[in-house]
Amino acid sequence: MTMRIGVLALQGAFAEHVASLRAVGAEPVEVRLPSHLDDIDGLVIPGGESTTMRKLIDRWGLRQPILELAGRGAPVFGTCAGMIVLAREIAGGEEPVLPLLDVTVERNAFGRQLDSFETELDVPLLGDTPVHAVFIRAPIIDRVGPDVDVMASLPDGRIVAVRERNVIATAFHPELAREHRFHRLVATMAAEHADPGEGVGRRPYPTRRSQQGR
Ligand code: GLN
Image 1: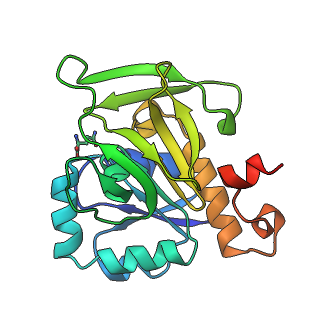
Image 2: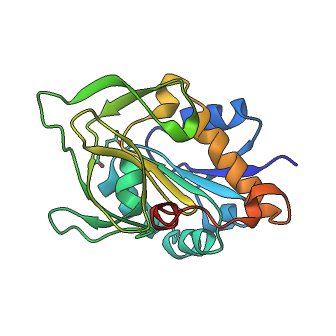
């Protein structure tokens, strides 16, 4: 079954996500209106400018339907500004937008000198080959809640990729480096969500707490 995965297409770098989803055999659906969320199995929230995205999400009435989609267990994947949009807490006191991830993010955390950079990152969940990560005025994760799994950190320990059950976020842009493994993971999670009788969908997504218990 081909998974229909939405890409929030209000603003920002959504075209590359559309291409990545196609590359992993999913059917991308550009989401601009609440009705576009009706028939999808997952959603990608791209990079861009989180303040603008916040305004457009509210202007088009997308906040509640996206929260409902995530609440039903459909995978949601945010990159960069998308990660800010998903954070429960934004350092400095901005109101959260779609508080689906129990993390605190700090916007533009790398400062002027390191506005943009690229690096190789180990992401064990995605296999042995490192991820080529493109950071552009990227946020960083300052705090993770007890149910949040850290997927990747920089060598200095700063957290740059997380997962909490069906919600994934990266501070960087895998889609700009033709890195499709995150999108493949989202498509797999969508398939498990759409047909929970099959395969690993029967298991709840592992959390750090449950892993510690093992
Ligand atoms: N700096 C942007 C923000 O704070 C995010 C940048 C990006 O998505 N590449 O919203």
